[in-house]
Length: 196
Image (cartoon, rainbow, N blue to C red; front, side, top):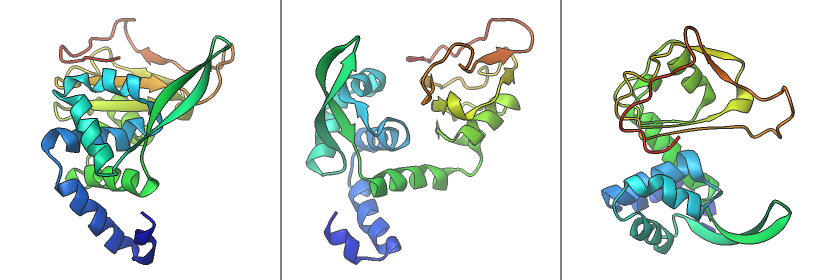
């Protein structure tokens, strides 16, 4: 990564892209999922969510050996108890490369396999533009206003594997965000869904 500072931006991306192109299909998918959703997340959670891939542990090891991701230990507090956990991280340029690869595959949010932009997800959910191409989505609810959904908003997303809704803001009573439906409290979810 230090040597890459000497190159221009397009040349850097060319070098990084060649490393990505040399990966197997499982490693490519894990790389793209980490770039779009899981950079800086605990490895335990990532392995759990990505268990839909056969050989996820081996895939992560290969990405580490090719220096495309890094695993480091961090201390966190849970119920006032300190514990150590391993975190997967990725250089900003590699994250940008992964997201750029996804953007190049489709310009239409409803036809992308991975959705992480709150503007794109809001458009897909609000206007019921989901398709069977969408497999993964992660939405930071802190960026959303109240969103009114049709109960069958996920109906066409038949290949949706996981949905992650979270908030980067600290929770305060009355300040949390919700998704609402316009008819009933029940939203039909796809059969393929592995993680919510």
